[in-house]
Length: 347
Image (cartoon, rainbow, N blue to C red):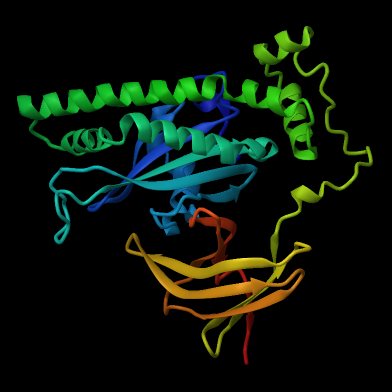
């Protein structure tokens, strides 16, 4: 991915090394189409640059879920979130009504060294975009579709112009959100930095990024009072960083056409109200292959999940969610499974 994100390929943006934002929508005729890319919109036509976006497991995510899905690809982590937006346009596929909502996808890309900030950043961006543009995104989509017309009447030209204006304001919102985000979050984490926070701050320092709010607070150069990560230094294990679940094995049983997944509860306490699902996408629509409820999952217990596969479908998404106190499903584990890459067993 390093060559794809080469800064010499586009005009330099001060925050380009830190963050790339993709706003996409589902076109019922063409599939997933980028509406806007930050900081450089020209990269939307770069197929090599867009490759990890097309393979992002966010396409498996149900739009009524409150969580998001991540993908790690060649040194970068892509945080993806899908949501619905108001729509009144005539759809281009039979069976869809004018009021069928638009499916919007937001993806934020960060270098792996600073992926600790991705969860919070995509949440803030999603909330800001939905709060100010949720009812206007359909107008941008209509203008994108109208721009394909060979003959552009004055009405179509007006529609395209209005969509471009909204995109301009949307880009400004993204820019303002990102502009001071990293300095503020580093300021917050620099008081009691975890191991991952130290690595992130070291990354910023080594890349020469300056964050004035942090500098002014410390009264010296950026990062001067923050302990940087030293790989030779022995540190105590931060138990809070241990993932609650881990996948031990994934096997493809070829004769029975089944997937076997062994997953372990790493916590020292039991987990309750667990939902396990395996899904796949066919023709841009999500299909559920298997769902299973677990009432009680004991500490350090291993569960064996067995699921049938769908003929001629190689890619699946394995997800585990927990029902929280508010009644929402919180994602605690997501794993993309490619049958071509896992070990096969003939039985």
